[in-house]
Length: 129
Image (tube, rainbow, N blue to C red; front, side, top):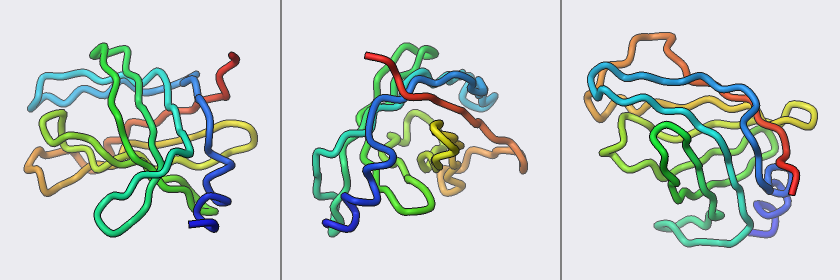
């Protein structure tokens, strides 16, 4: 876990989305717009792995989602989307300079068809307290 904690440090904090796609899924009739990504170092056991706590804040729909995440040298993976929200497997995010760039990952097992090439990307900067 010490190695995971070290890898996670570059992603920890509150990230304010500066630019993000609004995703509309016709089969669900819902729009999603991410506004904040909060990545904490509080540890949580999920199955047989250890992850960190996090929060996703949406402006559309107005909602806050508790998630878990894990940091690697090359990316952070954010998990925890409830199936009723849509066909989301999570978020893959990378550090680009002092920004966090991410993309929503889709879960094809939930039988919601997403056209090939459809993405929902965002770029976030560190939030000022």
